[in-house]
Amino acid sequence: MPLPLSPSYASVVAALRAAGCVFAEDEAELLLGAARTPDELAAMVARRTDGLPLELVVGWAEFRGLRITVEPGVFVPRRRTEFLVEQALAAAPKASVVVDLCCGSGAVGAALAAALGRVELHAADIDPAAVDCARRNVAGHGGRVHEGDLYAALPGELRGRVDILAANVPYVPTAEVGLLPAEARDHEPPTALDGGADGLDVLRRVAAGAAEWLAPGGCLLTETSERQAPQAVDAFTRAGLTTRLAVSEELYAHVVIGTN
Ligand SMILES: C[S@@+](CC[C@H](N)C(=O)[O-])C[C@H]1O[C@@H](n2cnc3c(N)ncnc32)[C@H](O)[C@@H]1O
Image (cartoon, rainbow, N blue to C red; front, side, top):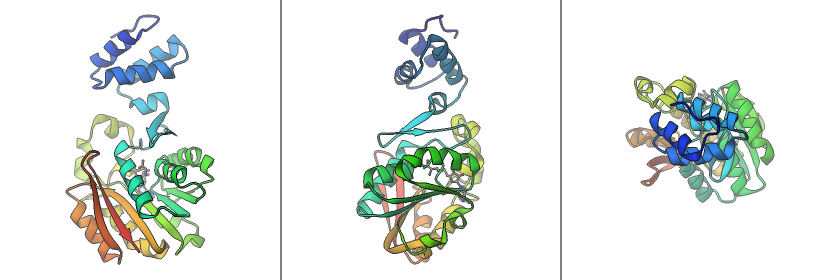
């Protein structure tokens, strides 16, 4: 649906609704607030109605009250993952060393640092696009971002010192990646989504290596699905961690917490 030259709230809502945006009113408010000129607004609405995720259109996602910069090719942080952050803060409210493994945009690490105050924050990801994006989001918290495969990316001096090891790993079974909503399937890289045949390949590797990096009493947290939760808990337990599952019915979030 073409927009008039000076798009109004009503015309933006109508264009978004016609394109199938479920939260057309909320999105229209956000786009009207983000665009500096009518031309910019029209361009943003066009990108959104072409299917670009709203967060990539405006360049940021809200996460625990923070504005997290998001960039093309980087996983958009989900509100559901705020539950993982809350569980980490409850499990280790005095944490001083925090690692955000598989950090994507760095939203989890940034939110933990914002809540904890002065912490030594490290984030790591295998994808250079994520590493660049995370650097922008954790810089204000004094965080350092490392590139590489899981623990191989981390500085050795972190061994045995990590109070919170947050790892929102990819956990979609390979055969189900194609069934995800188009916004994820078409705009987020497979590395950010695909967790292997049963979705638990990366989680198992993270669990197996955690004890070496955690401080005494430190904890590892990962998000998982309801279906995967029993195997995820088992992987943590086999790795020698004292393990429990936390569930948020409201956010439909499942977080496995393992304490060293
Ligand atoms: C589901 S996304 C989560 C991103 C971020 N933690 C969040 O919650 O928004 C998973 C991230 O894990 C990264 N990743 C996948 N395999 C990895 C590996 N072997 N080592 C490090 N990072 C990996 C991906 O590049 C992606 O950024």
